[in-house]
Length: 147
Image (tube, rainbow, N blue to C red; front, side):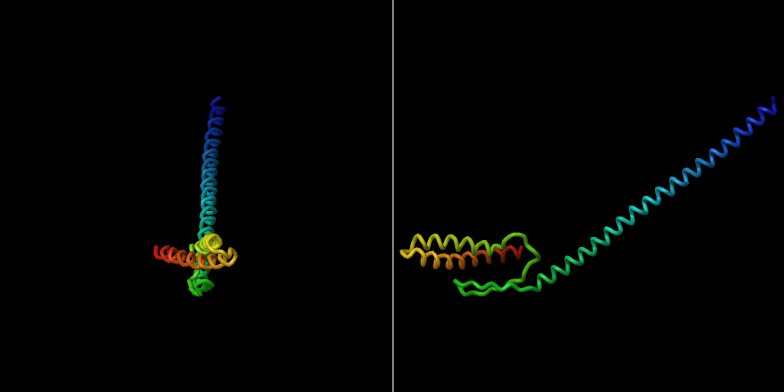
Protein backbone atom coordinates (compact mmCIF):
# COMPACT_ATOMS: atom_id res chain seq x y z
CA UNK A 1 0.00 0.00 0.00
CA UNK A 2 2.83 2.32 0.75
CA UNK A 3 4.24 1.70 -2.70
CA UNK A 4 0.88 2.56 -4.24
CA UNK A 5 0.80 5.86 -2.35
CA UNK A 6 4.38 6.50 -3.34
CA UNK A 7 3.61 5.85 -7.01
CA UNK A 8 0.49 8.05 -6.93
CA UNK A 9 2.36 10.80 -5.11
CA UNK A 10 5.21 10.71 -7.64
CA UNK A 11 2.71 10.88 -10.56
CA UNK A 12 1.05 13.89 -8.92
CA UNK A 13 4.38 15.67 -8.53
CA UNK A 14 5.41 14.89 -12.10
CA UNK A 15 2.09 16.07 -13.51
CA UNK A 16 2.23 19.28 -11.44
CA UNK A 17 5.71 19.98 -12.75
CA UNK A 18 4.56 19.41 -16.33
CA UNK A 19 1.54 21.64 -15.73
CA UNK A 20 3.87 24.41 -14.55
CA UNK A 21 5.97 24.08 -17.72
CA UNK A 22 2.84 24.18 -19.86
CA UNK A 23 1.63 27.35 -18.08
CA UNK A 24 5.02 28.98 -18.58
CA UNK A 25 4.95 28.09 -22.30
CA UNK A 26 1.44 29.54 -22.63
CA UNK A 27 2.51 32.73 -20.86
CA UNK A 28 5.55 33.06 -23.14
CA UNK A 29 3.42 32.53 -26.25
CA UNK A 30 0.84 35.09 -25.05
CA UNK A 31 3.63 37.59 -24.46
CA UNK A 32 5.09 36.96 -27.92
CA UNK A 33 1.65 37.31 -29.53
CA UNK A 34 0.95 40.60 -27.78
CA UNK A 35 4.35 41.94 -28.86
CA UNK A 36 3.58 40.97 -32.47
CA UNK A 37 0.26 42.83 -32.26
CA UNK A 38 2.00 45.94 -30.93
CA UNK A 39 4.65 45.75 -33.66
CA UNK A 40 1.93 45.53 -36.32
CA UNK A 41 0.16 48.54 -34.80
CA UNK A 42 3.39 50.51 -34.86
CA UNK A 43 3.96 49.59 -38.52
CA UNK A 44 0.51 50.92 -39.39
CA UNK A 45 1.14 54.14 -37.48
CA UNK A 46 4.52 54.61 -39.16
CA UNK A 47 3.05 54.05 -42.62
CA UNK A 48 0.27 56.56 -41.88
CA UNK A 49 2.86 59.13 -40.77
CA UNK A 50 4.80 58.57 -43.99
CA UNK A 51 1.64 59.03 -46.08
CA UNK A 52 0.76 62.23 -44.22
CA UNK A 53 4.26 63.61 -44.79
CA UNK A 54 4.01 62.82 -48.50
CA UNK A 55 0.59 64.47 -48.71
CA UNK A 56 1.95 67.61 -47.02
CA UNK A 57 4.81 67.77 -49.51
CA UNK A 58 2.37 67.51 -52.42
CA UNK A 59 0.15 70.21 -50.93
CA UNK A 60 3.12 72.49 -50.38
CA UNK A 61 4.22 72.03 -54.01
CA UNK A 62 0.69 72.76 -55.24
CA UNK A 63 0.49 75.88 -53.08
CA UNK A 64 3.81 77.13 -54.46
CA UNK A 65 2.64 76.52 -58.01
CA UNK A 66 -0.65 78.34 -57.33
CA UNK A 67 1.19 81.34 -55.89
CA UNK A 68 3.30 81.62 -59.03
CA UNK A 69 0.26 81.95 -61.29
CA UNK A 70 -0.84 85.50 -62.01
CA UNK A 71 -4.43 86.33 -62.81
CA UNK A 72 -5.12 89.31 -65.03
CA UNK A 73 -8.56 90.83 -64.86
CA UNK A 74 -9.65 93.23 -67.65
CA UNK A 75 -12.63 95.39 -66.85
CA UNK A 76 -14.38 97.05 -69.83
CA UNK A 77 -16.17 99.83 -67.98
CA UNK A 78 -13.15 101.30 -66.21
CA UNK A 79 -10.50 99.89 -68.59
CA UNK A 80 -8.45 99.00 -65.55
CA UNK A 81 -6.26 95.95 -65.48
CA UNK A 82 -5.36 94.53 -62.13
CA UNK A 83 -3.10 91.62 -61.32
CA UNK A 84 -3.25 89.42 -58.28
CA UNK A 85 -1.43 86.35 -57.11
CA UNK A 86 -3.79 83.39 -56.97
CA UNK A 87 -4.36 82.01 -53.49
CA UNK A 88 -4.44 78.26 -52.86
CA UNK A 89 -7.77 76.84 -54.09
CA UNK A 90 -10.46 78.96 -52.49
CA UNK A 91 -13.96 77.64 -52.36
CA UNK A 92 -16.63 79.96 -53.65
CA UNK A 93 -16.35 83.34 -55.33
CA UNK A 94 -13.94 86.11 -54.44
CA UNK A 95 -15.30 89.39 -53.18
CA UNK A 96 -14.24 91.04 -56.45
CA UNK A 97 -16.32 88.63 -58.52
CA UNK A 98 -19.32 88.95 -56.20
CA UNK A 99 -19.08 92.74 -56.28
CA UNK A 100 -18.90 92.80 -60.08
CA UNK A 101 -21.96 90.56 -60.51
CA UNK A 102 -24.05 92.36 -57.92
CA UNK A 103 -22.97 95.77 -59.24
CA UNK A 104 -23.79 94.78 -62.81
CA UNK A 105 -27.27 93.61 -61.82
CA UNK A 106 -28.10 96.65 -59.73
CA UNK A 107 -26.59 99.01 -62.33
CA UNK A 108 -28.54 97.42 -65.18
CA UNK A 109 -31.84 97.67 -63.31
CA UNK A 110 -31.15 101.24 -62.23
CA UNK A 111 -30.02 102.25 -65.74
CA UNK A 112 -33.15 100.76 -67.28
CA UNK A 113 -35.39 102.56 -64.79
CA UNK A 114 -33.68 105.95 -65.06
CA UNK A 115 -32.99 106.08 -68.81
CA UNK A 116 -35.53 106.84 -71.49
CA UNK A 117 -33.88 104.27 -73.77
CA UNK A 118 -34.28 101.20 -71.58
CA UNK A 119 -31.83 98.89 -73.39
CA UNK A 120 -29.02 101.41 -73.66
CA UNK A 121 -29.53 102.54 -70.06
CA UNK A 122 -29.38 98.93 -68.84
CA UNK A 123 -26.11 98.29 -70.70
CA UNK A 124 -24.42 101.46 -69.48
CA UNK A 125 -25.70 100.99 -65.94
CA UNK A 126 -24.61 97.36 -65.94
CA UNK A 127 -21.07 98.21 -67.06
CA UNK A 128 -20.75 101.06 -64.58
CA UNK A 129 -22.17 98.93 -61.77
CA UNK A 130 -19.83 96.05 -62.61
CA UNK A 131 -16.83 98.37 -62.48
CA UNK A 132 -17.81 99.89 -59.15
CA UNK A 133 -18.75 96.52 -57.66
CA UNK A 134 -15.49 94.93 -58.76
CA UNK A 135 -13.52 97.84 -57.31
CA UNK A 136 -15.31 97.55 -53.99
CA UNK A 137 -14.80 93.78 -53.96
CA UNK A 138 -11.09 94.20 -54.69
CA UNK A 139 -10.78 96.49 -51.68
CA UNK A 140 -12.47 93.86 -49.51
CA UNK A 141 -10.17 91.13 -50.90
CA UNK A 142 -7.14 93.30 -50.10
CA UNK A 143 -8.28 93.70 -46.49
CA UNK A 144 -8.86 89.95 -46.16
CA UNK A 145 -5.31 89.22 -47.37
CA UNK A 146 -3.86 91.51 -44.72
CA UNK A 147 -5.70 89.66 -41.94
